[in-house]
Length: 295
DNA sequence: GAGCTATGTAGAC
DNA sequence: TCTACCTAGCTCT
Image 1 (spheres, protein in one colour):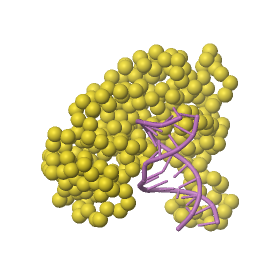
Image 2: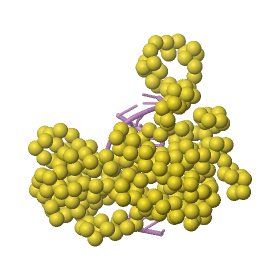
Image 3: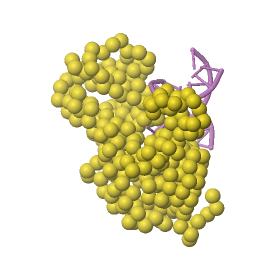
Image 4: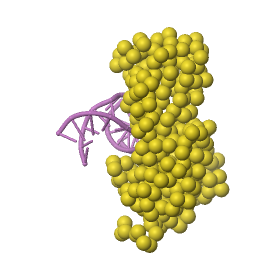
């Protein structure tokens, strides 16, 4: 779930639900008991995200949360039920409660700790104070491949595996192109696109990278077999069988290994890069002649 | 219900 | 480079 848009949305939700009032804090799991005691009955002054990091100012404490791969922190209407499973931190008010589960980080870091974390991060496309040119200069000044740089949080904060794959496809950039080989104009276009896509992700609460004009064509590509092959598929489009068949991920290339590229029809490729799965179209995103390597 | 996988990162080696 | 973190949605049986 959590790329940068998730954290920005979460910050806004926490601010809206708990902001300006004292909160009750507890650690039903016990692993954050001392921290929760320091937060308890403090007022949430501000919740904000930098990249994939979330910071809450509660009283004189600064809470730092990173959800990692599978952390969650949904806000639900009170009354809070008895905690189920490993709830690292529960925030509660008369109207709302929020159970934090499975985070990579949940610590009290203070202002200095927050500054140190933020200083490690590159510009975040979702923050109005972000410096696009810092991102462009960093990529242009490197021989690292752009597919790796987009996942490097010190280069650009908040982008994860889905936005990486999709934005590179949208701009027909090979993930294996060296940063210095990508033009500044293209990198500015990538940044501007990420701003739009990620803002949209904050609004919707999910990642949508396929242009409306392409949605139907892509969904058609991702139906496993034509409906005529199977009498069970008769009926409306929302039949269970149809939904099971429709494998569309809502992405151009992410999660579509082996399926046809919408633009050229060739199979979308997948490779492991730094322990993460990388998806791209080997034809639409082929590197420029001068830098081409066999892949 | 079991098993697999994932939008991530830090620390050990 | 490998592993821990230890959730939740999906697929398979």
